[in-house]
Image (cartoon, rainbow, N blue to C red):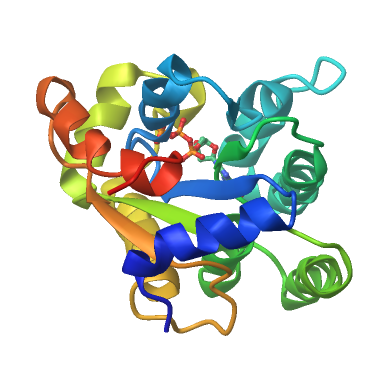
Length: 230
Ligand code: DGT
């Protein structure tokens, strides 16, 4: 088990290898991942890679996110295949700065979203097997840097309200039960460690707080992410 207090140690290890200190920001839909990344825009020497949702909404004019929500039985596999590609592109993107902050990863795509599709029968077991083989191949054969995971932990009913308020058109029919399931899958992966691969130590942040108070909470993670003495 990794300990977050060892964050600085891992930071130095990443620096000596001449690779950026790489942080994945994870958490339920609506947990504030984008806001968290934006908080770090004020610092120099940090590369921010926000999730490619816009690419999922427009691939040659097709909105894969919308197709997936409207007809998951038909489109979930296709959507997930494209998510994996865009995530891999983010993982492999060369970074000139000493710190790289990414929204999500191929790990949450596999352990939260694909896992959910398998559990509730959205994808056929054979489709799951193909996605899982892709994931395993990538995990074992393509170097993916990971030094720290920031987990924005939330209460499902709170993020469900936020999702309704932000009114992203594709998400209008998202039921609370889906958010609860995704919450449990994040907890299983990052806290209960039910999967073999948790690629880095996990820093848990209370992300239930509203925007006016969350900055203080975000600040607590700055020393772990930047090259600052504690
Ligand atoms: P934030 O800033 O915490 O509010 O983050 P969001 O909600 O903008 O970003 P995210 O990744 O939680 O979700 C974006 C949308 O894409 C949301 O409708 C869920 C969906 N999504 C993200 N990754 C996957 C995935 O791997 N599979 C599936 N089925 N959906 C995904």
